[in-house]
Length: 62
Image 1 (tube, one colour):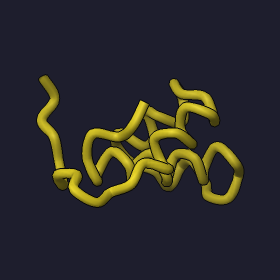
Image 2: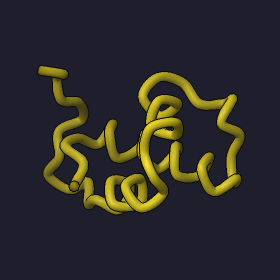
Image 3: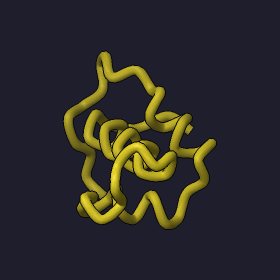
Image 4: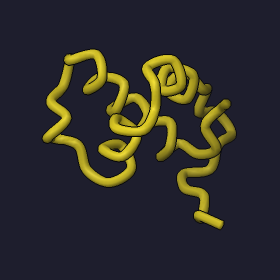
């Protein structure tokens, strides 16, 4: 599942770092904190590895 925006890709990268222990989960905010709790490392890796070229900065939640 590719990321839909740059913000989602970056949040997934932060969540992945926390999941791997490279960053403290308590330092995360918003979507990235929720991602750590609800997604697997494989799912986060797929989102974080999405290319950002051509992606919008943000996508509205509909």
